[in-house]
Image 1: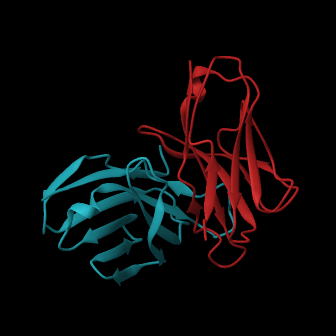
Image 2: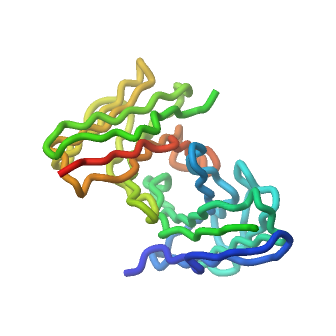
Image 3: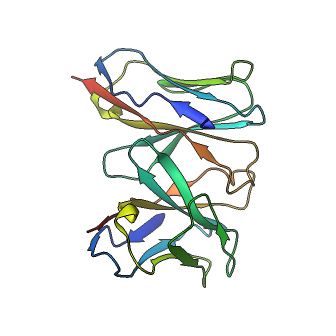
Length: 114
Length: 113
């Protein structure tokens, strides 16, 4: 049981390049999230999804897009990377139960934008 | 003002010590309180989950919630080097306010052998 798997684990981009971070979960969770973690800032929600085909903005959505075409996958895209997007990105998921606010996190994707 | 405040540490203690980690919050509507543990270069993992006030114990870990003071604590007894990690508190008013799960910035704990 892999839980939440993120790819890639590391990536270096140049300013203006685009990329997609992939997240897959095998727990049949309904809800999925993308967070970024920066020193002293804690975890900040970028986008989230409450089900297949749905997405919604979080606290810091600018510069990112997401898609959830399949229940088990949640993709985070950067169309034109900026140095301010250098961060560690975490995907998370949670079940459609009373434990919906208990998140299972992936191992993170460390992105550097030069 | 941040919704959740947490001292970043680092906190360094000798093996076997009792550790106290704390968070304060401003929103009296918070009912659900969690502690996550995050090892270096890993994702956070749930350690403790508490609803409303009171204490919850799990092995060497005790979570305590004081809603009147808007203060939560995590106690670790007989701390071990393997407890060295960053501890994040998290809280919400409802399980279904998906864009309103609030995390502390984490306290880094180092337990020396």
